[in-house]
Amino acid sequence: MLKIILPTIMLLPTTLLSPPKLLWTSTTTYSLLIATLSLHWLTPSYYPHKASTPWTGLDQISSPLVVLSCWLLPLMIMASQNHLQHDPTSRKRTFIMTLIMTQPFIIMAFATTELTLFYIAFEATLIPTLILITRWGSQPERLSAGIYLLFYTLISSLPLLITILHLHTQIGTLHLTMLKLNHPALTTSWTHLLSGLALLTAFMVKAPLYGMHLWLPKAHVEAPIAGSMLLAALLLKLGGYGIMRVTPLMSPLPNHLHYPFLTMALWGALMTSSICMRQTDLKALIAYSSVSHMRLVIAATTIQTPWSFSGAMILMISHGLTSSMLFCLANTNYKRTHSRTLLLMRGLQPLLPLMSTWWLLANVTNMALPPTTNLMAELAILITLFNWSTFTIILTGTATLLTASYTLFMLLTTQRGSLPTHITSLQNSSTREHLLMALHILPLLLLILKPELISSTPL
Image (cartoon, rainbow, N blue to C red):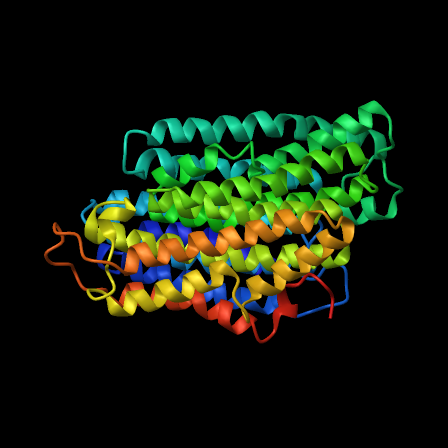
C-alpha cells in the first residue's frame, strides 16, 4: 500500500523542485509510473484483504477504484496543460500540487478498512476540490458553485460522523473486517432506522441521488477541466463505494429505507435524462448524464445482491473513464470555440475529423452499446432490479431509451450540421489531446476482454 501512497506524496516536492521547462513532463511521467505500478492490484485474490497494513487493505470492491484513481492523475495533469500555458510558473506549481493533494486522500478513502479513517479521507477530498473550483474556475458563478458543493457535502456528512461514533460506542470497533463478524448492530427500532438513514444520506448526496444533485451540475460547469474529471470520475464513485461498504452493516435494510431511495433513483433516471434532452450547455449535459448513470449504481447497491454489486462496480469504473473522456472532449471544443453552447459548436467533423472518432467512441460507451463494459453493467443491474420488482423494467427501460437519445443528440449536434458562420479557422488537434483520449478509451476497450477484473467477484 505504502509503495503507492509514498511516491504519490513525493510528487509534491517533485512539482516544487523541477525546473519550469520540465515541470509538466516530469510530473506526468512520474504519475504515469505510479499508475502502471498500481495495476498489479487488479490481480484477483481470494483473500479478504491484499496489500494490507493495520489500517488499509484492498479487497475486490476497492482495488479497481484505487487503480482508477491512480490512472486518472496523469490524465488530469495532461488535460490541464493547455489552459495553464499562459500562467506564471508558481501558479502552475500550485495547481499541480492541488491535484496531487487529492490523490492520497482518495486512495486512503478507497483503501481503508476502518470507518473513522474513511470518514476523514472522505471529507478531506472536499478541500482540494473546492480550491480547484473556486480558484481556477472560469466564471464568477464558481463561488456559488463552491458554496453549494461545500454545504451539500458538510450538511449531509455531519449525521454520518455522529452515526459512526454511535456505532463505535455500541460495537466497540469500527474495523470493517471485525464488523463483518459481528451481528448487524441495527435493529428495527426508530434510533436504528434514523442511524441507517444518516449513514446512507451522506453517500446519497455524494453519489448524487436525484433531488440532492443540485450541487453537481453547478460544480461541473464552473470547474476547470481537471476539476470536472476529478468530480466525475472519482468523487462520485466515493458515494457509490460508501453505500457498498455501509449497507452490509445494516443488513437487512428496513423496507422504509429501501423504497424512497430506490424510487428516487429510478424516477431521477427519467428526470435527469429528460433534462439532458433539453440542455443547451454541453458541460451541464454531461454532468446530468453522470447523475443519470450513478442512479443505477444507487438502485443496485440498495438491493444488495451479489449480481447487483458486481453490476454497480463495473458501471462505476466504466462510467468514470467514459464521463472523464467526455469532459476532455468538451474541453477541447471549448478551447477552440470559446463557448459551451451546443448551437455554437456544431458541425466540427469536417474541421477536426480525428476528434470526431474519439467523440463517436466516447458516445458509444456512454450509450452502453454492446460489447462495452457499460452494457454488461447495465444488463446486470436491470436484471436484478427486474428480479426485485417487475414494475421497475418500465422505468429503467424508458431511462435507457432516453440515455441513447440524448447521447445521439449530443453527438449529432457537435459533429454534424452546417458550420456556424463565426468559426473561420480552428487550431488543429494536438498529439497531447489524442494521447489523452487514447488513454481514456484503451482501458475501456481492454476491459471488454476481461471484465471480471472489475466486477468485485473473486475469481
